[in-house]
Image (tube, rainbow, N blue to C red; front, side, top):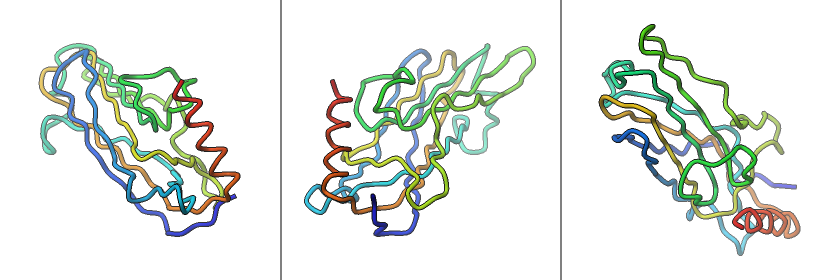
Length: 174
């Protein structure tokens, strides 16, 4: 299906949530990696989420004043907010829960797979020119930072495969 053009590399972007109950956005520009004319796509192998406080040295628990939940999603279409797990544009998601009285953090299992396997053909193919990151926290005392690390490769697809992925992506836009 795909011929690798590069080894795996990492794309990184951070979203800073500074207001509770408000969607916060960031993007990863893929324009340099995706080329329609050459049927070049981005193959995503895995996505990692790193939750941090207002600055890199702050203890994450200081970010919250009450029980809280932080959600973060990566999509390949701009949905304008968090999406349901059955949305075809969803690439990966994560959730962090904070229990205030116990001062305990727990990261929930992703609601959507963010590790697509280790084989050469394993991965999520993206032909869109951006990845969209949406973060949301239910309560906050200070800002919270979420770093998204996308492990990917550049691949060339056959004309049929590229067209099928492009059609599926367009269909998911409706």
